[in-house]
Image (cartoon, rainbow, N blue to C red; front, side, top):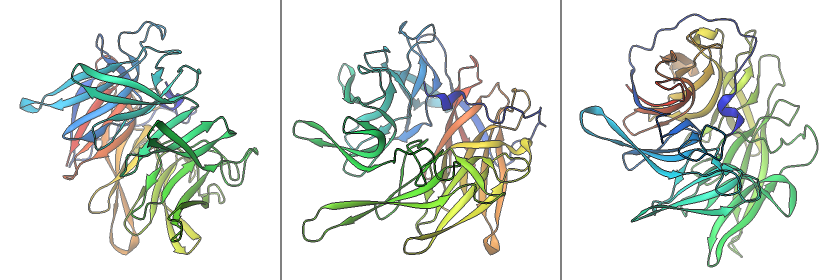
Amino acid sequence: MGGRQFLRVLATVVAVLVQAAWAGGNYKVLHNFGATGDGAVPAGPPLLARGNLYGATGAGGTSKMCEDYGCGTAFELTPGTNGKWRGRVLYDFQGQYTDGRPVSGLVLDEQGNLYGASAGGPNDLSNVFELTPQKSGWAFDLIYDLGAGDLTLDKLGNIYGVMGSSAHVYPAISELSRGSSGWNYTALYVFCSENHCFDGDGSVPDPLSWDAKGNLYGVTLYGGNGNGVAFELSRTTDPASDSLTWTYHVTHHFGETQRDGQHPYSSVVVDRQGNVFGSTLVGGGSANAGTLFKIAPVAPGRWRETVLFNFPAFANGAGPQGNLVMDAAGALYGVTQGGGNSACQYGCGVVFELKPTAHGKWKYSVVHTFNGQDGSDPIGLTIDSKGNLFGTTVRGGTYNLGVAFEITP
């Protein structure tokens, strides 16, 4: 299971004040992870598809090959009557040197196949796997075994992420495309081998994000001046050969000023105008509790970063991470693993909203404050067309092994 699931932000934080949930949000636990045979400790935010939620856990299940905690599962949550959701294990991972244990959430292609990353496969590295629905259950197939993290898909079902390769030592932003004899690997950009590389390094914490033109965006936790970078991988097509060319651009070096954020630890979201929104784990102000930022294109090859919000008090959340999501009105939603309710050692975390208002200002609100019993340490969100939020936590709940939840406006 990836280390970020158990990350405790800001270890010197003292106990914090209890903060009430936003009055407009209706919070409900959909599933408590950790029952016998169930998954435990979700490995990423849930995937909402066809009215169901899908995901993976880094522990739980029935295997005895991963100490006493199980090797994880792929799961489905289905809505039922009276607001109840039914959980089902789709696949039970067996661990070291076989199928590994999940370290990411899942993505779904148009044929209904699920993809994710697991650690500890045949090469004792992280793998890309495919789960295919069959009449008798879900079939597991290992499709790449030289290192992988969180994944994203394009409309054709090609897989993108940061992966290793036998051709180069350092990680690369890569593509897996299905061919006649299996999956083909292509490195789109290889990160440099230097410490504190000015262009960032391979520490990309979450899935890459698309814009409307088919360009990829992401962040690195380290590299640049040591505090991480934001980047764009732009695509162009040669009219003569119809071949694609990918070009890597750094759009921002974090930590260049005292109030700027440091160490971005989430995937970004891109709006229709090409503005990129994300968060940093620390930095930003005297509280050193992280930031929410916007990176706007101002000219070809030039971008400008603006800090939209500095987390000022731990009662309002601290250490944002996981992914951001955006609703139809342009409001942003995300999570912090720290801050909020002091029932947890460093705070149980919050779900927050950052809403655009007049004159370019943004308003921050806490949508929900976790208290441990209803979950703690949230790791990400997804949003539906009605503005309902779905997410997972890695701690808390009935068994203290995480929950899946829903927040309705």
